[in-house]
Length: 193
Image: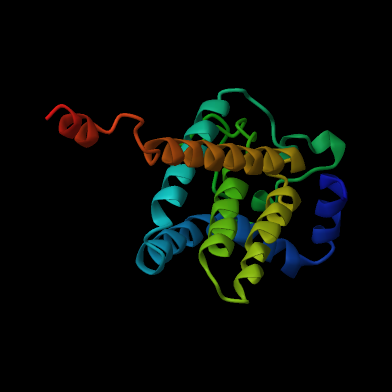
């Protein structure tokens, strides 16, 4: 894989690509998640609870972990990184220390985590042979978060790992809830008669 810096330097060679990458980072993750949740609820309602619960666990884990402060690459101009949003606009962050999101909370990447939910959820739920194309959303998001200088590669990898853990917890809870009880009270009441 290219380093975050070499990826950003490649993107900066083409203004149109830098602007498109910055736009993708700023705009796509929330609408994609909303459309995915509506789609899976309407078209694949049986799979909706699993993905909704895993999304909630992933987001909660990201919100807890964010208190471990990790600077994104864009805060390291001495290494050659720049903040694409300051150069091309569409910043989703205000000045450092203001706004809803802590700008030193780069680990894990909620953008990548949500893109993984959308991509893996569509691949899991859909039967269409075209469903594999939706993995591009995750790949483009990984590209965008790194090329914009908002995240390290590891931030995205950590988010995908957290989704894997959330899906595993959800499966275990559902398996436990659906496990037949060893005590069958109907048989016990009939044997006593």
